[in-house]
Length: 122
Image (tube, rainbow, N blue to C red; front, top):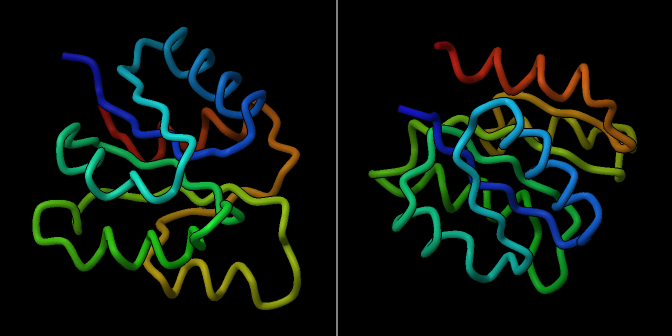
């Protein structure tokens, strides 16, 4: 059975790229453009991994990671944070919120898939 990945990304091009690459590698993918739908969608979809953009309109990806980690059914799901906002101390704040790994944009496909496979052992 294919591993399930929730892709939270407000940028249409990035979201499509992440989803296309993941689907081509055999994953089942659900995209979410609006951060306000993340928790409800994650509860319905029951992902094996969440890929989380940090800079979203209306809500911070860091807050969403904390919400996922506070949910009894979702707190064991690893989160791969992806962000263009990579200032000093940001990675630490993102990891403190509960992200298992972190990639700075622009993301190259090789490191992206390596991070996904590391967080989703077969």
